[in-house]
Length: 449
Image (cartoon, rainbow, N blue to C red; front, top):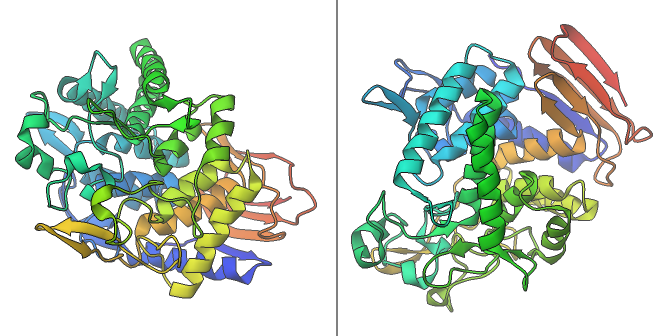
């Protein structure tokens, strides 16, 4: 039996959406064995339409807050996505965004203080970085090759990568003339993936204190800003490659650049001011590709993905409260109407919509899966990190609620953090006040703000 925290506010739509989120998260707990799990244990699946965790989804869910409210299950999920080859333990899953595991794992450590697990996380992180440096790192550009972190579907990519098949990995089989000889061979450098590698170097430095990782992070930050930043658009480009790249805005990539501190204050302001937002939230990519013209909205282009909404909302919350409120309210509205967290939404109608994508040479409409876990944990992220203003550090939690019009009175009960059970009440009169809860406390603690 897992006790999940309860939320009550003076906004009934938020109360309902939060309950739906908790239900969707809980419904995706299942027994599973893979990776380093030697026997079936409870893990968090990617969604109702999936039979396993995905490395990317697992890391994002843990980062979003499942590592806090379902800590043991999150640990199992991390273990299930690690493989061992010739005695070396490293991250499994899709190669290009596997490195995000390191971020989810560090957040698990922040939430739990599991010091016994820290050496394992450090080992896997170092092994993964060494492996990808050997296979996908371009020393001349100081960037890592690979598709975008959310972008396993071909609809995320320009026409030059199109193969008539749905997966980006088919480029390796069907467009060998453009592939590079080293590693998997896909010859693109994407904003979101390189942001993740940058942060992974920072994770490695924080876990090991090895100076080489801090230096590598600094060099990557410089390379990202030099090669992806577009002075004309005032944002980061989406793709860098040998054919001119792509200057569309990638929602999750812009979000990561802000959240990880790759963008300085001036760039952050420019990104936020210039980002295209649809009627139902930030688009996955703010443009489409010519092969989809007249066929509908592509699956990975102008569609709205809730986990991207959550990252963007978190990135803008401290800079432009109205932009945060727009994303939060849009997702709340769509979840209330559907009764569950959909995988993807239509940018104009807000209905569940999987988008158009190639399949065996034809263009078909993809499904939008139901009860998608990272969509539900994305909502949890906006509640914990933004509405309640929680900042998790090794020494404890800093809590500074966000002053916003979405709700004035907030009551979060039975939030378990290490050996503490927190009840947090926010009245609206004390927004801006910050309190600190030490990780060494025990028992029930009530906080009134």
